[in-house]
Image (cartoon, rainbow, N blue to C red):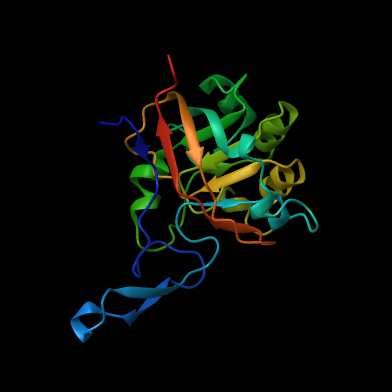
Length: 212
């Protein structure tokens, strides 16, 4: 029996997506006389629960296969930010208890609203630039959110939050389902698919109780 919490969203053809929807084809099928079922998927690197590596916005920076394990495996603090309407600020982070955490996950209203929809919402909650600067100043290694972008809606033309986080080497997790996760400290295991030289990849992630 395990107390692990799966915070991944399933990948399927009708899912919430950025860009093209994922598709698949059956290469071999048992019903056609083959020994096993074999499928082939066409998905973007930013599909489902995934990480953005620093090279997503900083050419020549760390790619997804170069991310240090210390960034994606270790204690993580889930912050209760469900009251935020659209943009998480530095003051919000401080009030939620982010001080001293090396890795943070933002539980917002997205988990029970925007993340549950098949199409992109008109509004969602994202991290504002001053919130990103607050994290960078404190040496945070990893930040995750419960929507398909860390950016707040008003900033998706210039992407200042991504620029700040990627520029500081912070790994970003997007599309995390935190709807059943209580705020507090956990042990996180996040394992991005090591796409060599790429800027992002699906990243199966689980939360576990911290060792006593």
